Image (cartoon, rainbow, N blue to C red; front, top):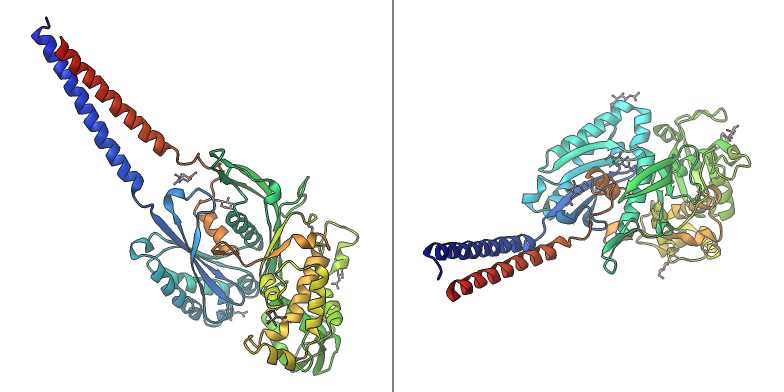
Amino acid sequence: MMSANKKHFTTAIVGVLVALSVIALVLSLVKTEDVTLPPTVKYGMVFDAGSSHTSLFVYEWDSDKENDTGVVSQTLSCDVHGQGISSYANDPPKAGDSLRECLDEALKVIPAAKQRDAPAYLGATAGMRLLREQNSSAADQVLAEVAKTMQGYPVAFKGARILTGEEEGAYGWITINYLLDSFTKYSPKAHMWVHPEVANIFGALDLGGASTQISFMPEGSGIKQNGASKLTLYGYNYSIYTHSYLCYGQNEMLKRLAKELIVESPSSTRVHHPCYPKDYNETISLSSFHTSPCTNWTDTRLTLGDGKVTLEGRGNASGCQAALKKLFNFSACGQRQDCTFDGVYQPPVSGQFIAFSAFYYNFKFLNLTEGQSLATIRETIQHFCTRSWEDLSSSYPEENPERLPKYCANANYILTLLLDAYKFNETSWNNIIFQMKAGSANVGWTLGYMLNLTNMIPAEAPAQMKGHVPSLWAAAITFIILTLVLGLAALLLLLWV
Ligand SMILES: *[C@@H]1O[C@H](CO)[C@@H](O)[C@H](O)[C@H]1NC(C)=O
Ligand SMILES: *[C@@H]1O[C@H](CO)[C@@H](O)[C@H](O)[C@H]1NC(C)=O
Ligand SMILES: *[C@@H]1O[C@H](CO)[C@@H](O)[C@H](O)[C@H]1NC(C)=O
Ligand SMILES: *[C@@H]1O[C@H](CO)[C@@H](O)[C@H](O)[C@H]1NC(C)=O
Ligand SMILES: *[C@@H]1O[C@H](CO)[C@@H](O)[C@H](O)[C@H]1NC(C)=O
């Protein structure tokens, strides 16, 4: 016979077990709610303050996945009306005002409750680098004004600054490889993050108005001398070569070309321009060369007055190429193969490249972004250059008349830069993809910049997939069942004895 004490003891055990199972059940329900809650969306924004214009990009991502790769998407891109912020050097508050329209757009797409947590950056590139060179206090004032405007909005302002050319190149490279999942990829089969072949890493070719950047991972022994950036991303080390050429953006290049042509035919007010279409004339004032350090050099061949010169288009493709080549000092490299021009070191190009910004826009207009062979591309450009201004303006009435006469020069410049300077050849040319977007996002430096500054690209490999949720469930259920079985057993034992 069981004693009364023993009976009480058994009842107590059963009670405790039942209570425990109830607690476990409640806990698991609470946990379920956690798991099924919608993920929190976060937002961030970056102004790309370029030399000729400014754009704003708004990004969003799930905060519980922020260390994964490829989770950030682009919510909005907004083009600021007017010129780049460096053009407001004489009236800095206008630089700040120019951003308002896009900031208002951004606040429309970011829910009010998320705005104060949204990091907001402004990065300025070569246009501001040039202004700083010319008048650093004017550059500081422009930056102070854009910062003041951004601080007036309910966002988490994180700074307005001028990027170095190397940062611009490296962040473009990060953006591309992040968007194309080339750093790390989750393999559902292996249940782990795998590191794709190094051969799947893309290089970045960026052409702006005032500078151009090349960034890639060189093959084999890698990089000697300076120009190397070492990055550790998702547990892997990357040694990338990046170089930025100030004054080699397409607008500064055109200005330098015009100045060179004028210098070569002194005391003439009418100068032949081989890259402009036949019958197209452009009158420029010589004082405009003083506004940029790229053309403000003193030249003994010419004392630039305040006069005006008319550039007369000649539509001569080969003359255009020859004139463009003179903008590069190839002889400064001597016989060195690991050298582009002006004595700049570059290891041989290797791997695939994405060519974006003005590389893309010019080739897109000429329908050359479909992977055509180099021979076809040369032929198309050559033919385009021979078309008269009358022909062009009637064939492309929709095209901006400021831009239309410049495609011949820009396209030939792209060929010279890629082939003669960077030394792509007939074969490696086919590794260049002309592309503006990857997925939903624009290719450019802004996304890489935000990812880096918000620490969203960890140095370590990502943690294993969020597999702990099912295992937690399994543990909870096992515990509940075990508790119930034990309780039942105890109850039976109690009744039995
Ligand atoms: C992301 O990584 C950082 C540093 O590695 C860590 O502190 C943070 O908790 C991680 N965030 C998430 C959501 O995993
Ligand atoms: C530099 O910019 C400031 C502010 O715009 C202006 O007052 C000053 O005259 C400029 N200096 C030169 C040398 O142009
Ligand atoms: C090119 O570079 C070399 C070596 O730096 C220099 O001697 C030469 O004057 C430069 N040529 C031009 C046209 O600037
Ligand atoms: C590009 O292709 C379109 C459509 O085929 C054509 O209308 C246009 O003229 C082409 N542009 C050039 C510059 O050849
Ligand atoms: C990214 O940020 C880290 C600091 O968080 C810095 O050390 C690193 O150089 C940055 N990466 C690039 C490409 O500038």
